[in-house]
Amino acid sequence: MADVKEIRVNTTGLHCRSCSMMVDMTLGELSGVEESQTDHATGVTDVRFDAEVLGADEIIAAIREAGYDAELSE
Image (cartoon, rainbow, N blue to C red):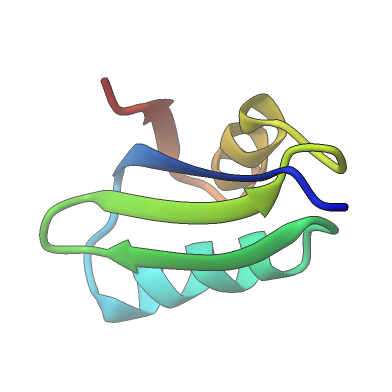
């Protein structure tokens, strides 16, 4: 059974809707990510994922690899 978690990530470097789509497409390719929604205006990425498959560190690393900075929202 999946251990579904949700996190909010502050994502910086987003300039437009295409940037948001790039982050969501990148996260969508990760095994274990069920859904992500990125808002370029607020710089917030909400991610729902299976914590048995991957963790927040891997999600943040993927966003950074896509060319944006990211850190967990507190």
